[in-house]
Structures are given as C-alpha cells and as structure tokens.
Image 1: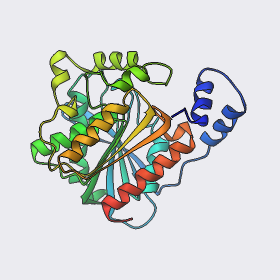
Image 2 (image 1 turned 30 degrees about the vertical axis):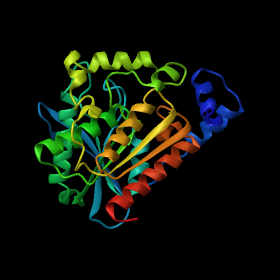
Image 3 (image 1 turned 135 degrees about the vertical axis):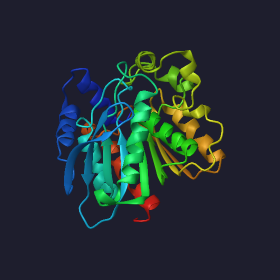
Image 4 (image 1 turned 90 degrees about the vertical axis):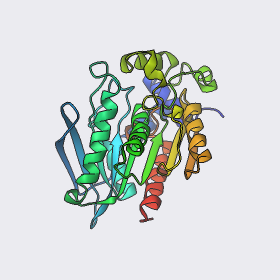
Length: 300
C-alpha cells in the first residue's frame, strides 16, 4: 500500500519542503491535547538511582486504572516531556492514570539498566496505585519502539519474578528481535524516518555484547514460554523496518493462547503514534489504543 498522503506531507516537511499539505499538517499538529485533571512530576527509587516519573490523572472520579508509558528513542534519547501530548491523549482516551517513565538512557546505561528501571517503575506503580487514586488490580504497561521493547521485557520479568500483576500490554511498533533480518528491514531500510542503519547504531549503543542479542529481555521474541502473559494490543506501521517483528511477536503471543489484537496502520511510518506528529492516523491509533485499554480495564 502507498504512503498515506499526510505521511508524505510529513516527510516533505522534514525534508524542508513547504506546500499546502505540510501547512495543513502543521495546523493539525498544533491542536492542544485533551485536558487532564492533574500532572505531577516526582521520582521513584530505581535499581541504581532515582527514576523521574510524570503522573497524569484523568478527569472524573477514581479509583482509576493505571497505565505505565515507556517512551521510544532507540534507548538513547527521548524524554517524558517529549511524550507529554501522547500521554495526555492516552490518559483521556483510556480513562486511566498514566505514569510516564524517564528511564536511564544508553550508552551511559546499557542493557539491562533501562529495562530494570522500567520494571522498578511498574512495581512501584502497582504497589502505590491506591495512593495515586488508582486500582492496583488494573495496571497496564505500554510503550512505543524501544519503549515497546521495554514494555514487552517488563511483562516477561514480571512473569519470571512473580509480579507485579499486569492486566494488559500495549506495544506500539515494538523492537522484539535483535537480528534485524526481516523482510521489512529490507523494504523500508531508508526513506521512511527510522532507517536500518539507525537501528544498528541504537543496538550498538544499548547492548553490551553479542550475547545480549540472545537475551529475551532484549529480544522478547526469543522468550520460550509466552503462556500466561497479559493480553496485548500490538500496533505496527505499514512502512517501518520494525513492522514484521512486531507482527511476529503478536503471532507468538497468540500461538501461546494470549489474547491479542494486532493492528497494522498500512500507510503509516515509524513514530506516527506520537501525538505531536498530528496525522489522522495518529489520532485514530490513539483512540483505538484507549478503547482497547478501556475494554481490558472493564470500563468500555
């Protein structure tokens, strides 16, 4: 399928080409995100240092479900501030408290440090849900790209370590396989925002050695027993090097009896889920993600 016309305008804008399509897109991207009841910055105790988190509370009366959000950026960049609009949309669409995690970044902190930060945040969110106005029996984890990788890793850690109990996982174009040998890596290796070369650079920054490529907490698709993992919603972009491994991961979960909804947004490229991108497909995906979370939480 061809690129969505709005995606082409987005790529044109990044290339410095200004036209009617890019001007319309700029206007759409500038629309303020939904209102939330409160936004609070704090820190939690991580495995080696304090981990900053930002807590978004939705309008309404709690206790609310709780969703952890792990940002993308190839494990080397990205902040909770850059994900603010996305988190506000998820808070409103899912009717959930959202806890955005500023985990440590590579190469300063290599694998498994960022994953351990996120596991600590998930444990903290479950243990402190009531004090946040949340419900500890309805805690989900979500993330995009490298954040999707970390979200998947945390669900595996939680299974292996006996908790925390997670009700759902939302994985947006997640990195699940460190071999980088799928067909989508060849089809979309350059020209579609995230390049194959960039992914190799990110991998080199994040992983310590070749052995880490075989560790399921870095390459979740290599995990042996997916049974008993929380239900999942896996979102992929049709023109993305990570497309095939995200869909393969969804298939592996389904084969193990895990309830899975896999959704490919055909004309989209990597990062389209970020609310600041401002595509029609962006807001469609955010609405759908929120709806699926509401179903999982029993609040649909």
